[in-house]
Amino acid sequence: MLRGEVLGPLLAGIDLGRELLEFGPGPGAATGWLCQRVDRLVAIELDHDAAARLTAEYEGGNVEVVVGDCARTPFADDSFDTVATFTMLHHLPTLATQYATLAEALRVLRPGGLLVGSDSLASTELHAFHVDDTYNPIDPARLLIVLQALGFERITLSVDRDLRFRARKSDVDQHNHVTRPPQGDSGARPSLDRSQRDGTRPHLSGDGVPPTSGPSHVDRAVLPRCHRDTQAT
Ligand SMILES: C[S@@+](CC[C@H](N)C(=O)[O-])C[C@H]1O[C@@H](n2cnc3c(N)ncnc32)[C@H](O)[C@@H]1O
Image 1 (cartoon, rainbow, N blue to C red):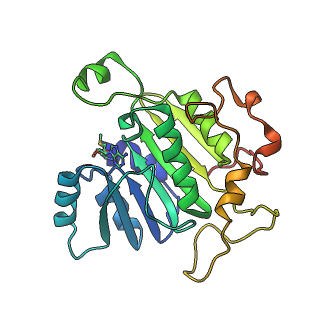
Image 2 (cartoon, rainbow, N blue to C red):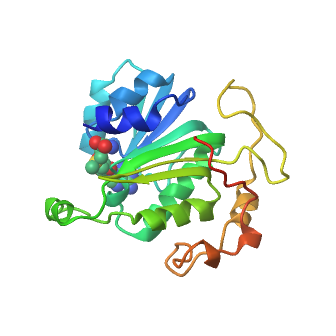
């Protein structure tokens, strides 16, 4: 279902680059599909047992599994071409952790890099399914606001039976110079100074998430420069 109905259509014709980071792979429903399309896939998974099973399954291959929290990863700035998160955001307990996770995706993406994901929409059935588990489906409008507020560009969201999205990290640095194409060589890349970039982010409310009432409440003066066009990503 995930591979045929979600990954195929969502990523048709899209180059994932060489290195992909997957948030919350669980049993690896997306991992096996994604790893065939990149040179290296790193999966960060909170659950030790799930991570151990995935490690065993992909031993000797191009998948590396790391136990950790996708909101606070050990990876350097600008180190992946793609960050993927499938059916995972609703497992994050608060808006603040969802925001932190999307901010982390932006941090580790290379300039021009792709964020791609899908998630379940809120429903009675999904709620019942998570009776002893975290149930915090992200509101699609909130996701759009957060992605915009963080500075993602070329954002595409579709809401139907589920929520699907793609967005790009800017390939323009803080001085508005084009840095590099989305994918390519492994040589030295210009990177943004973290504190400098943090300073460009919108102010957060007390719970660590951006203002909730819509993009008009974001202080645009502190947003990174970006063009929000309608190009397909
Ligand atoms: C519903 S599973 C999704 C698995 C897979 N991505 C899929 O689509 O089938 C959610 C996974 O996210 C993991 N997870 C939850 N919170 C996480 C976090 N903060 N960091 C990394 N992984 C997390 C869970 O342990 C679980 O394996």
